[in-house]
Amino acid sequence: MAIDFDIRDPKNQKLVATFLIPVVILAAFFQFMIKPVIEEVNTQKAELTTIKEKMELVRKALKTPKELEKEKEVLTIKLKDLESLLPEDENVAVLLNQFSMVEKDSNVYLVGFNATETIEGGDRPYRANKYKLTIEAGYHQFATFISKVLALPRIMSFSDLRITMNPMITRETESYEGMENQPRHLTIDCMLTTYLFQKIASEDSEQ
Image 1: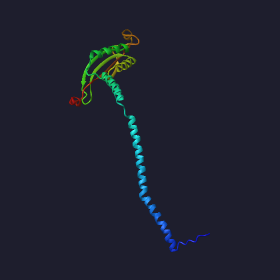
Image 2: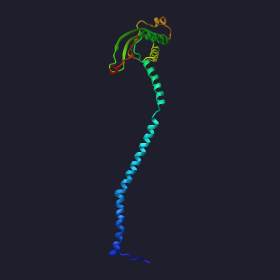
Image 3: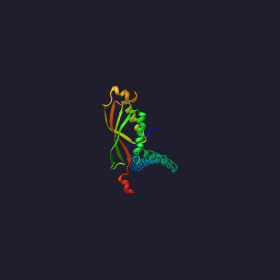
Image 4: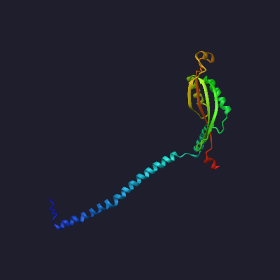
């Protein structure tokens, strides 16, 4: 049975309008009122999730007092070790004794050891003492000497290296001057710098 529905009929138009207008109103209400609220809620949920994740990371990163105390003990030990590498006073006797042992182990001849100057660190927490060294040795022996000096329990550095042939040594005289593994055909002049702890001005003012 066919339904005779003529949209041009005013009664039918009124009927359509009766149902269509509420639908349009509901659609508009959802689009402009409900949908923005839903989107805002979803955004807030996403931000809340992100915040919770960050808080969880922070919670995991936080250390207990016991863990902090243990870490402090480890850092204190490391600090003492570093302080030993940067003493407050220069003990030249100890330094010369260390160099004497290195000289013997490296098979070199330390023929000159002279203090030249002390340089204040200014705003840096150290001052530097400079010593001019004169060494007679071969290339390999001198390289061994440098490596052993830098391995000493002090912070030191070499600079101003100058290598020349030792004018006092010839092929004939060298065989009488030393053993085969302890040549002295080179004269090496260099600057050794040792570093000492120095309190900077800000630290002094705080005290």
